[in-house]
Image (cartoon, rainbow, N blue to C red; front, side):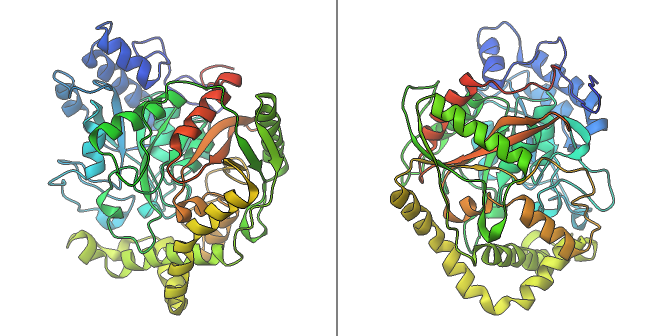
Length: 476
């Protein structure tokens, strides 16, 4: 384990070096390295670092080594990855971050999103951690070790895709599966200094967990260390499945010279706003964009006053169904007695507000119209906001043994910008454009465009990555 103060990463002088997924794939294609060598190096890194990160739920290293002898043909042939443990992978039990699944059996089939990922040639090393059902924005647990942030292991890696983010940031794999129902790709990306895109609604195939949603807020994705890894992933995913209702992304290979109209704000709904350290990064990002020739101005995004309450009710409704109907949803092995205070608290919260169900579903589904009109009225291509209101807090701040009311309030204040884009379905990407030097923690900035405009976000992200390369965990 390499360490600077509280940092913990696995980067070393092996065949992986600090290459991104595209770099590894290209070396494999040129036969400069073999898939077996890559998988062996990744497994060695995982074994070395995971005792310090607690990011792996289930490993399948032996199967991965066998797969490396004859990997699937695809652009990412031989590149190792992890799948978030709320997603079915054939032959592996899925625990959804919950002790309610302690007796889970291996899945008989894989979810469609898994097939879409593995078709690209990725090799599965195992499943990564998430908090129970992904209901919270920190990967913490009531009765097991929490998942740590590689930049500072005393702090959270974020959530709910915290395990995947920790493994990518620490250098175990260059890319890993995530899923985002309220910020769960963008939040851990911001915490761990990664690129995290929540794509447009319907862009990718689904995990089975997301098949039935009253408001379609949750969607799968990936976390990566480079813009091109994310861009190439979506270009390759599109070859397997393309939603005819969305414009094609295609392969965005680098920055253009296009200039965009960008509005920025440090305020979210319900009066929440970013702290001073985060605001400094927001203002510097606005200045950077302006120096690149973009039109940038301060704006107000008038998210409806009822939005936070409506989203909380939807969130709570999901907790209610997991609490009350878990056996019907997941099978007879499900034991609701083992659920956390959070899921039980969400269930109770929903029952107290159940009469509001038709109204909040209607209003949340209408948020896509509100966002579309906002961009039109303000004449904008992109909205820039902080991904989070402050840097990743110490583990325990979102502890799963906290009283429901305290945990719920803390989550809403921290993840104050991300849920709006789950509700409206537009693409939204977090980029590591800042760093808190005192705490040695990354700060993410979030860019959101019109529905279906991932290609625009990739172009802008490439421009920013080129102008201000991300800080690396394996350097001082």
